[in-house]
Structure formats: C-alpha cells, structure tokens
Image 1 (cartoon, rainbow, N blue to C red):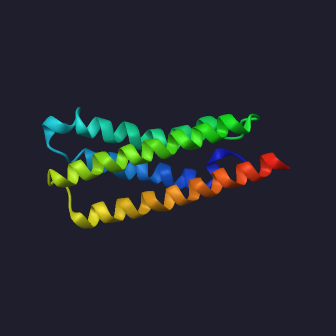
Image 2 (cartoon, rainbow, N blue to C red):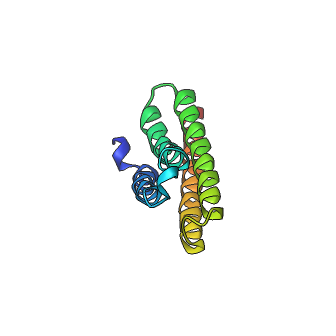
Length: 120
C-alpha cells in the first residue's frame, strides 16, 4: 500500500486542485496574498499525509495527521474570508466546507486506527 491508495489523500489532492483553480479567479491583487495563502494551506493538508505515511514511528505519522488537520482549518478560514469578500458563491463555500469536513472525519478515523494498531 502507498499513500495514493488512501481515500483521504486522494480527496485532499482533489481539493487542492479545486481550491487552487478557485483562488486563481480571485481579484488580481489577491493572487499573491489571500490566494497564495489558501493554495499553500490546501496543498499542505495532503502533503502532510504524504510526509507521515507509513512512518515506522506511529507518533510521527500521528503528528503529520495533526498538522494536516491544522492545514485544513487554516484553509477553511481563508475560504471563509474569501467568501466574505465576495470572491465566490455561498454554494461553493458550502460544498468546500462539506468536503473538508468529510476529510476531517476520515483523518480522525485514520488516527484512531493508528492508535489501535500501535496498542497491538
């Protein structure tokens, strides 16, 4: 098994592309401010899973999951600010929020299975 087999990793990669494409529609002056921040944090959520995947030290993998969750929360914040600035629709915000909530649940499940595996 490799990191690409993880459904949560696949979903986070898809969201990275979707958020990146969305951020490129922001006003030009935001491309290197809010746009850059949301692209970085969105990419960071998947990148942290890739970094920790299959690490022999469960606590390191668990820490990477925790960092991924933090990147998701940061991305959600940036998206809420962009929405409040009227850069995209409420429907898009709801869709992305729901997608990230699904990823959060999947990451908590992954973390739980790591803890259980570690106890064995």
